[in-house]
Image 1 (tube, rainbow, N blue to C red):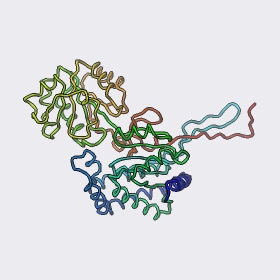
Image 2: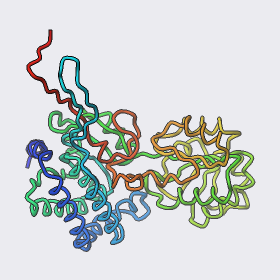
Image 3: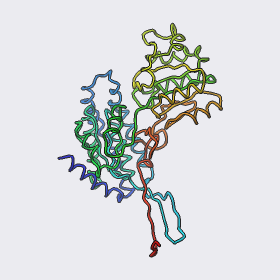
Image 4: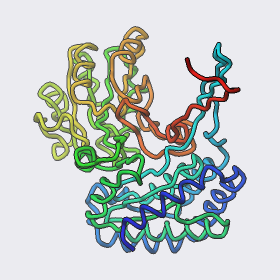
Length: 415
């Protein structure tokens, strides 16, 4: 089928979505969660076909990999979305004008959302559940790395939709070839918003080539500042969690910024990182503090390229600063405006950091690993927006809506 026909069918199907009852949407999502668990073996078989084509040392391998535990977690996220109320039809503003006109600003779907993503088959489940609950149709453009996984998941979604009498054209998977990306980026009149999820290179390509509006998500160059007033025990745990919990995700720590007075504590902080095999790229002062206290094969002097890098692996840079102002300046210079954190017991420093650091999520005394739609109580997420127009941070149901004005009168005409 020509892509133009696919776009047309999805656009037509999108117009039916706002009319679906909440009960129907809930039933589809509950059935999908149950069937995902039931069909775990089939999903993992398809996923294994994808994994066999990828080097295990590729940072994308962990993102691509599905396990029984991960499928169960995905199903639980779908159930969470099923329990959330619809974001549609909310009255955002209501007023009665002097001339008697009654005005309401009411939330409505965006329409057709195109999602371009790389080796992340979980995205297929996540974005479908959120788009269905928010009344949006969905065009998926996954990468060739996950083509078997995505095809198996979309087949399962279509089966559930058909069983519930819902038009399966509300979600379609485009071919993995790059030509399909080009076609979707130019599908003006058919696609309302495009959301890229993946590397900075992918996001840049979409932003520079799309004729359809784009919401940027994904790339996370994440810093944590260890202040002069930071608690060592608390700080160690936060840093290890932020770096090693899951290194291939966008909220993983990339750069530890440390106050120069705390360099004597760097060896202690490094124990847990070394145990996990984290390679450190340390600036001069940090390198000197770590020499002899950190495994030599995991320690290297940093160069400029190591700052402002999203590693997505067991690698991390270390930057020494003279104080809070310098830490904020460094972070604001290299941030991708995703997630940034401070570890400190001094409230004045925390308050200044939270105000001055420009990112979608800013933390104090906790791990950046919490930047996640489910962790924010949003059910799931379609991505982490790193821009400022329309949405910022985890994008869930509310962020997948726009609004329209509804005006009721009794014959009024304008003078």
